[in-house]
Picture 1 (cartoon, one colour):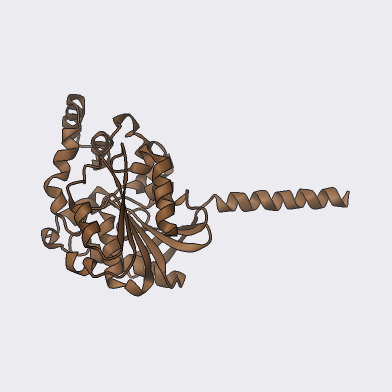
Picture 2: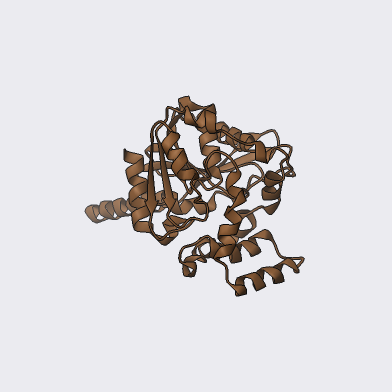
Length: 303
């Protein structure tokens, strides 16, 4: 009887540990204007995942972090995004520098010496900028769907997305534009069709977001504050980025509307860089080609 009880207890402990490991630990860090919320999953070498938008919460990066079971994954809602919305967003403080500052605050709070930085889309700027400011705390940078080192990609990025939209998509966007209750996220659901190589998979970006996360998932006011900053076209970190001594890996969907030569130029000029293309994939290659994407990502983390 005692043996059965012992075995039963061990099984319960094992199942409890599995359940705990499958969940994110949600915590927050007090700052002057509220809190920075962050999320941790797993144990091992630390990785911080930086989301783009700008304006998205950390949530969509979970699809990447969930695959990295041998690492300590840290995800952050920058101030003004996700659950870290405690003050009115405006262009005086919604900048790459402010987001990098939030990331560094979390590193200090968690007492992490060095971590790998994974940035996606516009957050590839934040990842590079973080390594420029804090090279002593950056062990490796992985850029997913990189925007290069400045904002010149905006000259063609929107055109590449619109090129893939159908007449039905444009009709839907026109209808939303007349709807005073519609948000940028509503329009983004339609625009997503232009981000994917296979438009039948475009809904996968939002389909797995639970209803409880929707209020936090995207802040369009943050996006407008960021993109309306008077210095946005002056942002250029090329000189500093090309001097980085940190290993850098670039993973790019071959059909990403961001592609315009900036990825190749970045790879050629960075000192310790390798670039990997995921065939038949757009801006979110882990959703279209998960097997080759995660193979390249894990290879990039190891080597």
